[in-house]
Image 1 (cartoon, rainbow, N blue to C red):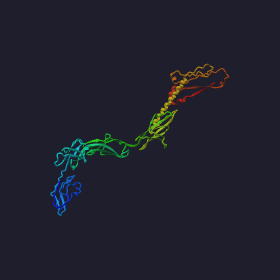
Image 2: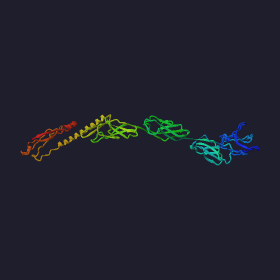
Image 3: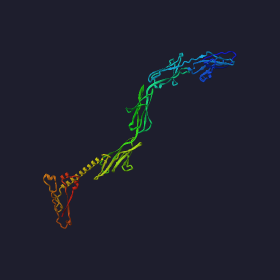
Image 4: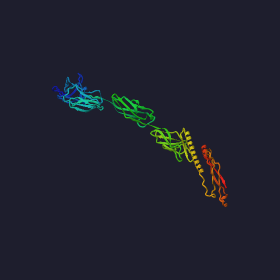
Length: 476
């Protein structure tokens, strides 16, 4: 503020200063010594006649009556300029909507009650950072298709002036964005643990409505979804939906992978129950676990140590066998299965029975064995029948033949044919005329195999083969 003063001749100025709101009868303070003004007030005059001063960073609190005062070297040489200077502060103000939705257009206005010059230039600030300078009297800032990044504190100023208007907050509302799900605690989840799923989103106003889904099935609501004593049934993909008054959005799915030890351990059998000698029966161990069991041990009942390892095991001897499946979270054993080795005619028969229902399977195997035995006996009988029915060859001479003309006598009726039996046999013995052969005193033997008739075969059981006999006759 520009100021001049005069004083009586013969006085010498010793002190000059500015004060505010002087009160009659009270000592007036020097504003340069007041902490509220000391950094902002600058005296530009002298001690002769110039009393100009500058007050910077003026606010509405600075609106007062200011007076200049000087003191001379005379005892009564104290003067104050009255009525003083009245400082009226007109504040710049920013007008803006209280709330604007993302995508809308918004107009901010910088207002002042002062008469501004034609060349006034406005400067806009967002969060104390300058945005742009306007080179005309347009005191408005237009934001088209406002974004959430446009939210902040806006203020304005006049170019060439240090005063900046109070800031006004621009509130940009928008629907949920960046919706995500986090799992607490993080890391591996083991059956029996407690887990909390947390839904986060960026929205204005903040979302207060959250929904939880496993796959497409609604499972809960709220910002947090807690699962206590978690089991493998809770494994799956989860996502949340965040909603406010302006819209909603789903998060990406997160997978809840629950680890658990082996369970439902069982043994299955591959191959036929009847194994050719030298073969084996393969037992396979199966289980349900997460992560999958990779360690399998095989045991024979009444034995403390393992008899094998791996998911499959070849059993070569009788006994009850079971397996144990292991992963890093535990182990479980299966029920035992029975492997029985039966020794047959040149054949080892393996009969495998489970812990229950095995008796029926043993009976079936025994029936198959008896039927196979009967088939073998019938084959041998057929071969014997063909051998008996072959005609004996005629001897070259009567003197060379030891045996000849073995002829069965058969019945002629159909009934007799059905019940073929040996009726009579003629044995002729021929000897050479020489009497001095050492063999004359020896006995000659002939064997006669009597084949059981077909009708008898049909009436017999599998012990028929034991009826085959050998009859020896002594011929001299």
